[in-house]
Every structure is written in structure tokens, then in C-alpha cells.
Figure 1 (cartoon, one colour):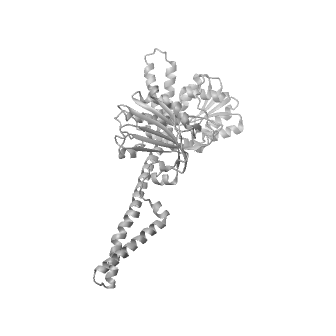
Figure 2 (cartoon, helix red, strand yellow):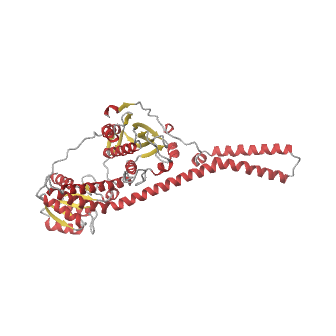
Figure 3 (tube, one colour):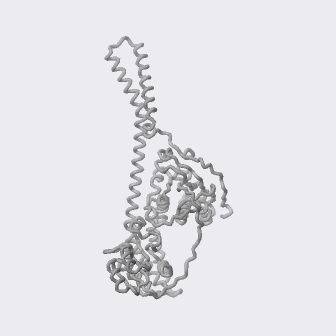
Length: 479
């Protein structure tokens, strides 16, 4: 398959504008009222035509009373002016209004699902943390040849799938935590190309057409996820093989593009175009393609979250995405991500440290009883001494009783009586060099408000695997 993959650079015209991209020809209310001269000219020409028609009729007919002439004038004004105003002003206005109302309803529907996803994420992540944690502890105690080991692995695998489902919902609702850095867009595609090639299979020809280097602010891992989801969607639309093309370009979106397409902000963007030769989509499918759980696949062959996740990630990167498709004519997704002039950081692979325990004393403050007990069991199994607290006030009291022993605070962000950040600030006033690690299953927007994602603070997101928790605890203690 690698022999079929082609990559070539293509010259880019930096003056590219929205004129290169699909346009619509109707007159919008903005066109009419932004240029009032056009409307004035239309009315003047119309009145002139009416007067000319009236003069011709009066020459043919015998002399009419003044009242009759006025009635004839008014009649012609109505039958000529109204159709002109209807087709040149009112109909485009109504069409545009209906389009905007549909976009608003669609946006509100997607936002409602996003709010629901963010709301259930915390409780769901606490449940998954407990399942994954105790499942991992059981697996650690089992021998390699234990006949029950496969059952435990199935439990952990299902829990991880549920965790991914939650993350996909948070991605759609733009509430997941991302780590944006200056990165080169072409480099992300180049590094992902081999994975994409294996993903789509040998019966699909994969091509990449890359423009000149461009830098965006992005979480490279999330953009890679976008590419893989789009490739998966394309593969499923080409059951008998076909062609899949990833293309990058530099485009400039102007106000006219925004008025025509109903999205976008003026500026220079890096565009990713993903085109397949598959079965395409009808209008109804195109309008619902980014909705969570909407799928045209058979039952059991997809969650309906792949493209909604793409939508959420692009929006979270302050970008835009649109789809162009017709039945039997393939599909093109176009993603627009804002360009910057900063120097890109090289994408590197971090080697995970080996698991280590310790003998330090850790104060664990967690209001969920099952998660609190699990965390204590994990830490004690690896040699740590643990003091537990069931809420923020209890955490402060337990620290005051053991302040000379405690080496690390392991704090849930949202707790009764006092929140995690508040507990940390109070304890830090007593012991300035105290170390802390925050945990939460809440969405990113709430965590931003609570201030736990500030630079210099350590945070880990639930559900957290046992190995990840132990590595993070060791990392914070060793700093």
C-alpha cells in the first residue's frame, strides 16, 4: 500500500480568496440594503416603464377621465412593481431568513447534546474509574495462565471503550482538555500517513497533496484523530475500493464567503480537504452528518460519534468544517484552521517511565466513596501511606493533624464544603512547599473556571488508569 501513496508539493497562491470556493448567486438582504442605490435604480426604472406603458395605452384608447388614468396607473404599478419586488427583494430575504433559522435550530440542537454530555461526564467518569481501577488490581494479582484473566481483560477493554465514548461526547461538545501548540499542519499529515494507509486498506488509493509549510495552533493528537475519523468514514463509503485524497492549502476567507456559506470569519486559514470517491450523501444526510449518534451504517457497525467528534475538535480549535457531497459523486470535507506566524514545535514521542511506588504519605480528598477507597487501595498496594478525607473541610482538618507527615495532596476538584483549589490555597499558606495533584471528571470549561488548569498546577483527568495514576503521583513527588 505504501507504494500507492503519493505525496507532492504544490505551489500556493497566497492571494487565494473565497472566490475559489463554492458560491451562491442569489441576492441576500445584505446585498440589497448595503447598496441602496441598486434598489433605487430598480424602482426608478420600474416607474419609468410603467409611465411608458401608460402613455402607449392612452394613445391607443379614446380619451379617459383623470380618475380612470389614475386607476390604470395604480393597476399597472401593482402588477409590475409587486412581482419585481417579490423576486428581487422579498423572496431572497425570506430564503435567507429560512436558511438562518435552520442553521440556528441545528446549532441549538447540537449545543443541547453538548450540554448533556458535559453534565453526565463527571458521574460517568467516577463509575468508570472504579471499574477500571479494581479491574486492573485484580489483573495484577492474577497469574499469566489464570483462566479468569481473559474475563478481566474483557471487563477492562469494555470500560476503556466506555471511556472513549465519554471522551468522544466531550470532544463533540468542545469540553475536553486539549494541549494546543504551534505545529506544522503538513507535518501532522505526513506523520499520520502510514497509519491512514493501513486504516483504509490496500483497495483504496491514498494520495496526499501538500501545499507549502503552514503553522497552526493545535493539539497535534486531536488533529490526528480528526484525520483518522475522516479516513474511517471515507473507507466505509467505498466498500469496493476507490480513491482518498488529503490536500492542504492556504486560503483567505473574506466577508463574502461568510455571507454566502453562513460560517467562517475573515482571515487566513490552513485548509485540509479530504475527498473520497465513495457513494456520497443526499441532502438529508448532509444536514445531519455531524449530529451525535446519527449514522447510516447497520446496527452494531458504528456509534455515530466519529464525525461529531471531528466537528467538536475543529470547533475547539477555533476552526470551521463543511461537507460537500452528492449521491454517487463522492464526498469532500473541508476544514479551516487559523494560521499563525509563530515557529512550530517538533512533534515528539514521549517514552513512559516504568512503574514505581514509594513510601511517602499522601492525603487523598475525594467525596465519591468508591473512588476514594479505590485510590487508597492502589496507593497502599505500591507502598505509600494514605490519609483519606471525604470533603474539602475534612481535608484541611486532616492536614492540620498530620502536616509534618504529608508529602502530597491528591485532591478532587469539586467537593462539598470546600473545593480542591480552595483547600490547596489554604494548605499552601501553612506549608508553602506542599505538592498537589488534582483529579476530576468534569469538562474543561468548568475546570478552567475553577483555576486548576493554570500553569504550574498538576492535573489528571478521570477515568484514570492505575498505571497512569501511579506515574503521575511519582512524577509530582520527584519534582
